[in-house]
Length: 86
Image 1 (cartoon, rainbow, N blue to C red):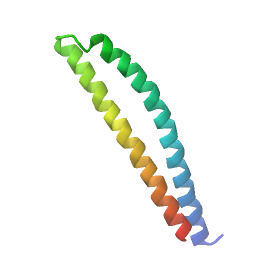
Image 2 (image 1 turned 90 degrees about the horizontal axis):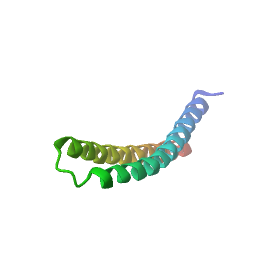
Image 3 (image 1 turned 90 degrees about the vertical axis):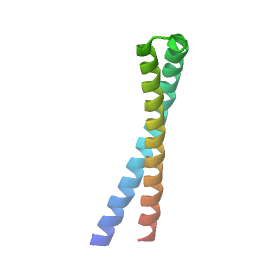
């Protein structure tokens, strides 16, 4: 196989892996959001600082998971597009 063929195979593999991981992370995000919602509704009205820290940490984690899903999806799109151009 030529080097170009090998590169195309590697790019396609990266695209597929990124797409698959984004899907798995998206499924995790759904489960995490449900659990986080339950925790937030249970302790959300508390005035204790530790409770607020937990809620804030959960919100930050949700945001970062969302960003990771989008970053992986974008990487998959770019890699796939590049692979097709080879």
